[in-house]
Length: 465
Ligand SMILES: *[C@@H]1O[C@H](CO)[C@@H](O)[C@H](O)[C@H]1NC(C)=O
Ligand SMILES: *[C@@H]1O[C@H](CO)[C@@H](O)[C@H](O)[C@H]1NC(C)=O
Ligand SMILES: *[C@@H]1O[C@H](CO)[C@@H](O)[C@H](O)[C@H]1NC(C)=O
Ligand SMILES: *[C@@H]1O[C@H](CO)[C@@H](O)[C@H](O)[C@H]1NC(C)=O
Ligand SMILES: *[C@@H]1O[C@H](CO)[C@@H](O)[C@H](O)[C@H]1NC(C)=O
Ligand SMILES: *[C@@H]1O[C@H](CO)[C@@H](O)[C@H](O)[C@H]1NC(C)=O
Image (cartoon, rainbow, N blue to C red; front, side):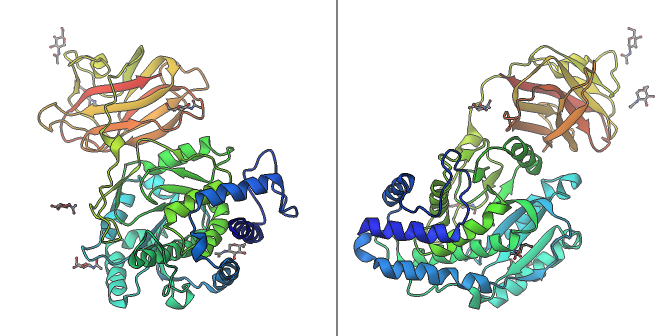
């Protein structure tokens, strides 16, 4: 009987997923349902998805699944604020937000998204917010708050807020009874699955990639560039999701062309389990063997409670506290457009001792560039500015870039990508993508706003393979 259910489920899935991606050696033939691979898949799925067979009427499940894929056609998510841009972007960042008894972090999350991105990065993404709370008073207040605070972003088509009328929702009452989960929890994740399906459905046509985050996260400066770099390195590889955080459903990146499949999957199984579990079954189905995760996380949880109120989260990104060992700066020369007086040694900026480099003034556009004698795989960069004890002579507005060179320049590179912005005079960052195989030749510190007084560059530390 268990086998029978799973054959039905596989057939149902095969009907809604006419194309199976990522199966390299043995493309899935939808006409031969009982192939060996399929039997294996049925067995595998049965073992992994913990549906309780004694409580399930198999035929009903199958019919339900078919019925449930119907209302999808009538989903009418509507725009509350803003308008999507005319041209397709690189990335849509999706947030689904509900009212919480402890107060909302949504505004802080939006601020973090925009403030952590440079103006040129902001051109490449839009933020899509789904207000998924049935309470019209809360929605009204949220609309008013977001409209006021984020007016410039709304006008620039960088922020769009939507919701979905209750009549589009799948039934959220009399849900399946679960052994392990309380009815409240089942109701919570069932609704969340449908919310996520709606926002992903809306996002399908506006960008090449879609990133889901939650409404209570802080992001790392320059995260968009890191995602863009990673995505270009992974462009031709088979993957379903790239994960830029290990927590829940935060920082999960999809290709928008895969979203329609995942939306169907969420709607078919919305009552079964929370969306992060469904996602891992979706991976199984599309043959992504293991999660593809990148460290450190680009997103941190802000609150210390999760969105489901009885589930306190002790969610912490462990790798943020990792001991990273000592830097091993390889042989290099340092060049700068800053004024080097004869009492300050430029090389001190790159030395591994306690000496530092000081310049009396620093104008916007000035740089300090480390050019490695031999290009190398750099996997971590730390730039420390300002005096050690006091916050004096910090570079408040500056950025660090990685340089590549194809034209054999002597003291520079011909191609730079942004690694990140300094925050409080510091950048400390893992270089995510070693996949492109490109070796870094230059590490450039760029001053983006003129300093009122001098600048201290304490250390540029590199970790090199
Ligand atoms: C909107 O902003 C006001 C004023 O800051 C605040 O009191 C209120 O809680 C906010 N509403 C929501 C839904 O966050
Ligand atoms: C996306 O575009 C395709 C092709 O133009 C269209 O068929 C589909 O309905 C669109 N999807 C959404 C959610 O707007
Ligand atoms: C987290 O919880 C502690 C007590 O459990 C509280 O004092 C603190 O304010 C909370 N932090 C946030 C950001 O809500
Ligand atoms: C460098 O120092 C010279 C002499 O002190 C000064 O004229 C010049 O403006 C300075 N240049 C910069 C970029 O600060
Ligand atoms: C630089 O060195 C010269 C000669 O050693 C000295 O005369 C001059 O005062 C020095 N300048 C500064 C700013 O220390
Ligand atoms: C990238 O780096 C990770 C961790 O340092 C390593 O496990 C992986 O094999 C590297 N990939 C390539 C293609 O170099």
